[in-house]
Length: 179
Image (tube, rainbow, N blue to C red):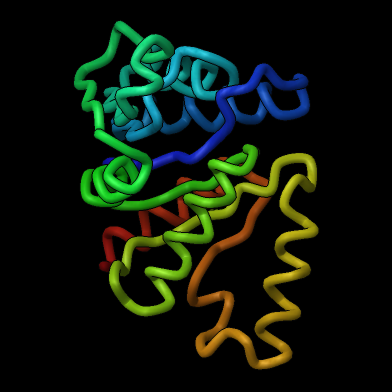
């Protein structure tokens, strides 16, 4: 399975890097392919290392203006002309999506893909990996949107929220298998 992971390119504390590394190792041992932003920095690098070192494949999808931050040792690297094309390529090359701790770019990608899922423009399963409670505030806001009628579909139908990497992968494997 090709799993698209959105996450930070920043160097982060162990409370984020340790669970990210564990998740990546599970992904690699499971024979899955990481589809990600292609960076060799920060949390992106931690996850790519974990996947690669445990037998998984790497498909990087970066943008031209970040070419100098692209990881060199990958199975495939694609450079999009802009961020919009990058998002389309990431979605097109993946079977499932995981959102990990990240900044504005990660939040943009996550909300864009959730909006597309809401409108059934894709049906790929989406997991919000809530490491160290990073997305608890967002989940609270999303629940409020649901409760007050701003979401026309159940939040649980849009995204699976967990703080456990093993549960995230198990959910994705089952969701993709049952299609």
